Image (cartoon, rainbow, N blue to C red):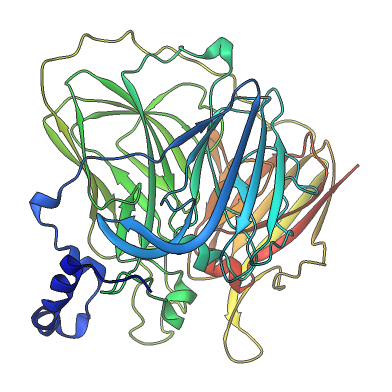
Length: 489
Ligand code: C2O
Ligand code: CU
């Protein structure tokens, strides 16, 4: 328990009245934060740790304790007492060593989401258990042709994932373009934007979700950017920024817009699109990342997250007036971009083109059908299953021949969307709802809409070993919507 400062005591003293005013809504951090214009803050970024001579060694200490959230002192989980944790900056071919120190009172471990590295031993191994009070040394080796992009790290111990990510355990990883390509995209500056959500009570402690919120996938009532609430950003007209946006929310889908400025998408999740694409809106599922060029044009624009209807737990005619599993019914302002000052000298135009691997028309070694389902379980509770089975760490659900290409059709029979994530090997999305996609994209989290399906192709190159695929609504993963894949020689 933290001693209460005088200022804090005064704030708490004022609560009596406020709580009467908010009535049944209850008193939360969000109602307390109150959006006073004076409290508007400039966007800050997590500290960055960069590899030198091909090596980055870091110590990540996961602990519960005091941390700044939305410009207040809260009690949450964090790596190295900052939320988000430090940004790790790497290049293809690098070695990343992480000493994970578990100062939590629960088990944990570490996943490097999206990195194409070995899942074995002390690599990106989701089966590792790090007990409270102990440490584990991870060692990741990026291949020399590792795709550039934004990736991230977070805990992955089955049963603990949603609580630990929602509680504040996440951080960004950036893999820069290889030396030869560096500088091919002229920009004024780069920003790392980690979006997450959290619910805190009036005392600044994490509010556990209701049973129903767990079934839907919990959404926090505070949406944060780099741990801040609605900060401001500044740019001069004509400046070009590169934004790396991560959706680290436990369940919330983000439809991101920044009207009035020019947006060009360089890539999603891993690598780059064949060429930059003009966009107005980007849908980021939990776990997705966007690599985005923002050219400042207009005076002021809010960075908005619009609501996305991701379906219901029981579907139509189910549990009567069950609330929609929406990302809230209103849109939320994540940040505000102010474009002020003299016009910047124009930068050379972006001409970059990338050759994208296309698995269409290539020989396929196996075709698989996976079915995501929600239903009534044995004990009367809901079950979340893949192919009728809940996660079992010792059962192998898919055995794959290393070095081959596979064709997976993933069908969702439930009335809710599920964002599916495969570790280590990215997926090329080639069909949605049975229709071919004209410009197939590579991602590591793919939406499987309610009562629909997607088809992906996967190249199981470079590594062997056991890993997992799962729903990235992390409550669903913890409830069992995860399977084991074993890639063998
Ligand atoms: Cu970001 Cu297996 O998860
Ligand atoms: Cu799900």
